[in-house]
Amino acid sequence: GPSRRPPPLRRRAAAAPAAEAAVEWEWSREAWQAGYSSGQEAPAGFWMQVEGSIPRELEGTYFRNGPGRFEIGGQRLSHPFDGDGLVASVAVKDGKAFFRSRFVRTEGFKRESEEERILFRNTFGTQRNWDGPPLQRVLSNFGDFTQKNVANTNVIHWAGKTLCLWEASQPYRLDPSTLGTIEVDTLGGLLRPGLPFATGNPLVDSSLGEELAGDPLSAHPHVCSRTGNMVTFGYQMQPGAGLGTFKTVFTFYEFPEGSFQPEHKMNYALDGFAFTHDFCFTDRYYIVFQSPVEMDMLPFILGLKCPGECMTFQPEGSTRVHLIPRPGAGDGLQPRVIEMEPCFVFHHANAYDHGDKVVVDAIRLPYLTDFGELGNECDFLDVDFEKMPVNTLWRHQIDLKEGQVHSEEVSPRIVEFPAVSGKVFGQKHKFVYSGAAQHPTRNQPLQGVMKTDMETGETWTWFPGPRCFMGEPEVIPKANGEGEDDVWVIVTMFNGDAGVFQVAFLDGADIEAGPLAVASGEEGQHLPYGLHGNWCSEYFGPTGEDTVQ
Image (cartoon, helix red, strand yellow):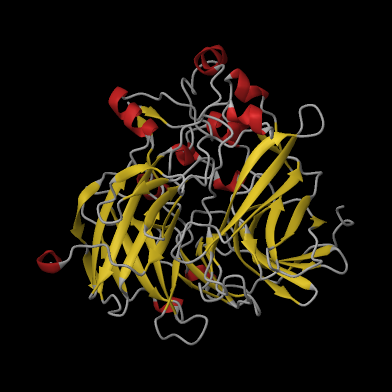
């Protein structure tokens, strides 16, 4: 059972920024909002204009996914996470960069594009007549338990397949060279189609058709640096033991390099609802943070709200850390559940075993945003950052002997999208890279990149200006790099001064030096802020005579 209550929190003292008075802390809301304009496809692609020099050794393709359409038929979406997936690729070779982008042709995207109106229920607030009066919402959505697979959260290239991931359903497969949509991919029948709502009774679930009782695939796979396996998970919501209660059933997969035949597949059930966007692992354990979030499905069933709006954070509850033994981790290793202070985690940086402890570095929020309140109160572009929970980098030392979690905030700066070198994932690491706000403590949008030394708390940052806004940094180990920070860092950004999206290439050993190169998109060819992406060492740009710029 869960261990006793946690010890008190600690925060490292923040070093005062040098010459603070000389720094411009203000950011341009108008430029930030412009970055949330709906994107345009570039199916034919184009060569990007490069300032500086892209490292010649860097050859491959950066795939990135994210919401790309924020209105349908003139009607705004309630939340940006409900936007249809717009996949971009930046193919890099010989110091040049070729850009291409296309919307994922999901069934929902195709139908709504044809009819030019919102036809489907989404996760975070967008549904038929979502901004209308309650009775109208009920009449429009009652009895429809489906959700639109927006295929907008991540994109990976593994075992010859390019897959767009959305964690509540199955991936869509793309052609990596053209980004054309091929089909929903069940990985050779491994994944049952449908949303992750099931009864747990195989006979009943088999009768639910293709809409429910599905096996989703997480949007956050990670490659184990020790085994080379891609490790990921899916989950199902099933009825719990008590009336109106839930249990969450996880399925963990480990795919060997070049294969979608799992080397390991195992289930783990936990009591209650677990809103789990990301996970991490060590040599011994899969690690899931179960935050104190409850789900009341009645407003969804009635048609009043979408699932994301039915979640409420319980500040009096505890976050439960589940340590689930990995296959082959050793005989006698048992699952552990250890309680800690209430918090919410979207993204983990990394985890590793350290004697009788497990160390987990993650971006923490003190509580989960109320998505219903956010959507109904105002347009998401008018959000008041000062009223939103802060995202900061924390180190958690899980003491297996004591059954306690010792938590420490490493830096008070607002950060998101943490990443470590692929050479150390699941092993001891020193450096974490993340998108960062420019002000050292205030809640603001991400406008730069921060590198953090997790041992000393020292940080290094790069900020291009008050009208530039960042996405997720992608960390790529250098071909012959020896140190952990011998990496290239690629990050997409919107440059509000130039009115175009850009891709910056930085040296992870010296973030403060700024970009080695910046590749710019074409005017009128907008790419909104994305969510997640991955680097692939295969080049999927033009070849032969087509490579002449």
